[in-house]
Amino acid sequence: MTTITEAKVLITCPGRNYVTLKIATSDGVTGIGDATLNGRELSVASYLRDHVCPLLIGKDPSCIERIWQYLYKGAYWRRGPVTMTAIAAVDVALWDIKGKRAGLPVYQLLGGASRDGVTVYGHASGEDIPGLLDEVGRLLDRGFRAVRAQAAVPGVGTVHGVPEGQRNAGEPAAVERPLVEGWDTGRYLNWVPRYMAMVRQEFGHGFHLLHDVHHRLTPIEAAHLGKSLELFRMFWIEDPTPAEDQEAFRLIRQHTTAPLAVGEVFNSIWDCQYLITERLIDYIRTSVSHAGGISHLRKILSLAELYGVRSGAHGAGDVSPVSFAAALHVDLSVQNFGMQEYMEYLPPCQEVFKTTWSFEDGLMHPGDAPGIGVEYDEEAAARFAYDPKYLPVNTLADGSVHDW
Ligand code: GCO
Ligand code: MG
Image (cartoon, rainbow, N blue to C red; front, side):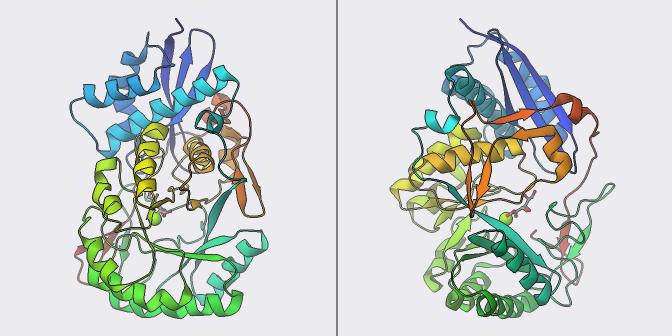
C-alpha cells in the first residue's frame, strides 16, 4: 500500500502571506494544498503542524473522503475557519496526488469539463469615477467579460476594494494593529447608483457587472441598494449584509430582483443550508480553501444545483494560486458554475507558484498537467519571509465598530 511519508507546512510572503501544505507519499509523489487564512495565518499553520500532520503519516493517500471524515469528525470540534482551512489544505493536496498518480488533471477526475472555459471577473477599483471608468476600460480591453466595480465614496476616505497604490494586491494590511477605515451608509447608498449609471453609459451592457458590499448594510438598506441598481442589470450584489444571518436574505429577496451572492466567509455546508434550500440567494461564493477543500465544496455545489443556485467561488489575492487552480478545476467540471473571481497574482508570487492555467478572451482553463497544475518552488519561497499583517477594522463616524 502506498502511504503518506511526510506532511510539512511552508510559509512565504511573495507580496502577501501564503501558507502551503506539502504532502509526500511512499511512491515518490508530492501534492500541495493551500492553508492560507488572511490575517490569521499562523493559527492554521499550527493546527496543521501540531495536530494534523502527525496523523497523516502512514495513511493511504488515495482515501480522500475517509481522511476528510477522520479529520472532521475525529477533531470533535467541528467547522470554523481554522479547522476547515486546515482540512481543505489536506484535501487539495490529496486530490493533487491522486491526479498525478493517475496522470490526469483534477477536473477529469471530477467528471470532465462541462464547458470550454471558466468565466472570470476582474476588479475595477477607482478613487473617483474617472479612475473607475479607466479601470473598467482596461479590463474590457484585456478581454474580461465580467467586471466588479467599486469606487471610493466621497467624504468617507478609504474604502474596501480601493487599497491605495496596490489595487490588485488586496486589502491594506497593517503590521502592529489593524488600519481603521471609516464608513457612512447614507453617502454610499447615494453614490453607488451614480457610478454604476456612468459605467453602463460609457461601456454599455455587453459585459457582466458585479459589486461587493462587503457585509456593510442592514437588510432593508440592502433591499434599497438592490432596487436602486436594478436598471443597471447587475450580475450580482455580493455580501449585502453580514453573512452569518441567513434569515436577513429573506427580507432583501422580498424587495429586489437584484441577484444576490454570499459565502466567502462561510466554511461549511451548514452555513448556507437554508440560503440554498429556500432559494434566498442566486450564487454561493464559498472558496476551496476556506470551506473544506474540493470534496466539501462539491457537496455544497451539488446541494445548490438542486435549487438552481450557481457557484461563484471566492478568488481574492489571499486565496493562494493553489486553491485558485483547484477552484478552476471545480468550476470547469460542475454543471451549476456561475462566475469565478480572479484578482491575478503579483510577479513575485509567480516565482513561488508555477501555474499551468491560461486566460484567453475572458475565459480561464486550469490546464492539463496531472493534478492541480501548480508547483511550489521551495527555494524561491524561502527568499520571502513571513510578514505578519492585520486586515482593517471598519468604524462609523462616532468611532463605533461597524461590519467589515
Ligand atoms: C472579495 C473579498 C476579499 C476579502 C478578502 C479578505 O474579493 O470579494 O471581499 O477581497 O476582503 O478575501 O481576506
Ligand atoms: Mg467579497
